[in-house]
Image (cartoon, one colour):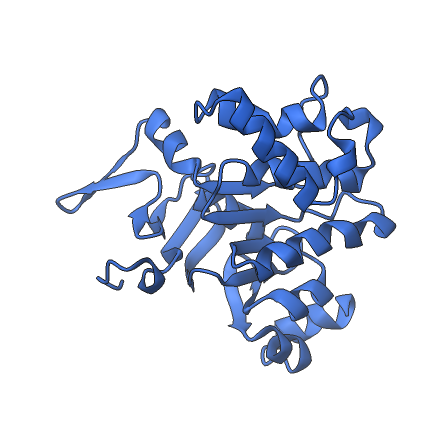
Length: 261
């Protein structure tokens, strides 16, 4: 782990020997990965390979059983005292989580709130931003995701792709330094996938650090700095996405890509 204090030298995400089990079921085994600021890491692999669990460990929605996770040089969910780790109080963990945006498969928008109100909610309630400032910022973010004209629409009046774009705007409203995406297009009709991926491409181009669990191999090839293929809770292969997708080295990667490409 680098001791440099300058942000550009500190990795945004460091996973060091991360393992996670549910009883006797070992879901993650000794995962070690690094994501630098401004990079996009895409995680691919079959269902049940541990991708989403790993993503949820990054913001302590799931607790690791072994290893360490750091975001921007700070251990996630724990503090170290001597050689022992102590779990943070839920309030402290929630405070840490504020700087990590997360977009899920399901949009989870508040149905009784408009798009604008959904985006305003966390800054006002959690970050104590004034309503006027939060409203102005929410309008900016909705414009950024191409929904300036949908600010007063309720979720039920929006398509799935539009709802997911509102969810992205809502995550951005807390001004995160890291964005996590858990298969953000998998619940969408095929013709709506592109509009969400375009927003994610723009985010990546703007320098946002992103970890993305996805089945969209074209997006991974075009946008990712690193592609990681996971299977059975381990990293099987990792590298430049064009290399991994075009010339996979591991038989398991070849078999998987042979089915999805």
